[in-house]
Image 1 (cartoon, protein in one colour):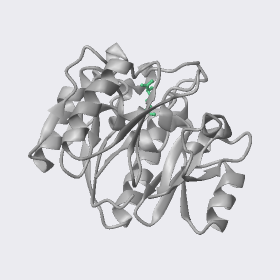
Image 2 (cartoon, rainbow, N blue to C red; image 1 turned 180 degrees about the vertical axis):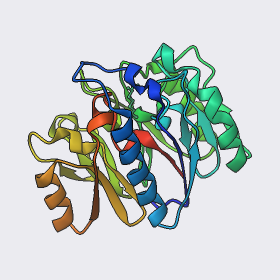
Image 3 (cartoon, protein in one colour; image 1 turned 45 degrees about the horizontal axis):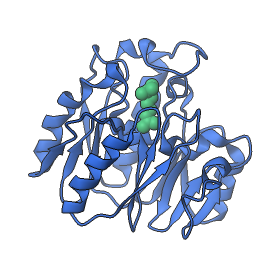
Length: 255
Ligand code: CIR
C-alpha cells in the first residue's frame, strides 16, 4: 500500500457505451471527469508521481486501467481481459509500463485474467476466479510471478460480483476491508478483516494509497468505522463509475 507511482487514464466521451451488468442510467462525462480529477489529485497529494494517459475513444472502459496489468516490484504483467471489448486496451497500456519497468511480461492465453481480480497483500497474491478470470489465466500468471518469488493463491469471486476486488481491498499489509459475503468464503483466513457495513457493499472497492484510504462517497457507516480504526479516509464521488460497475481500485495501476 506504499507506492511512489500510479498510472491513470482520463475517461472518454465513449464511457456511455461502457460495459455494465445492469442499466442504472447513462454515465455523465462531465461529472466523471470531475470525480476523476479529484481522484488523481488525491493520489498526487501523497507525493506520488501520477501518469495521466489520454482518453481512448475506441475503448469505452479504458478508464478502468487496473484491469489491463499487474504491477509488482520486479516487473509488470500485461493481462488478457475476459471481456472481448477490452482486449485492445492492453496494447495501449504496454508503452506506459515499459517506461518504468525493464521486465514486462504478458499473459498470452488461451486463458483470461483481469487485474480487478488480483489482490496483492503483504504476504501473497490472491486471484479470484470470476466471469472474467479463468483457471488457465490464473495458471499462466502463477508461472510468471513465481519467477519473481511471489506465492499466488487462487480463490473465488462470489457469483454475480464482477471482480474479486469489487468486494475487497487491502488496508495495510495484513488488514483487508471486505464484504461479509466474500469473507464468508474463508479466503482471508489468517488476516485481520474489517467488514463494510451491511447495505454498503460497494464501499469495499476502496484503495489504500500511502496515507489515504480512497473510498467511494456515500457509505457513511463504513467511512466512520475506518476513521475509528485509525485510517485517513478521503471520500470521492463515484456515482458515474458505479453505473459501469467500477470503483476506486479500477481507476489506477499503483506501484
Ligand atoms: C467492465 O465491466 O469491465 C467495466 N465496466 C468495469 C471494470 C471495473 N474494474 C475493476 O473493478 N477493476
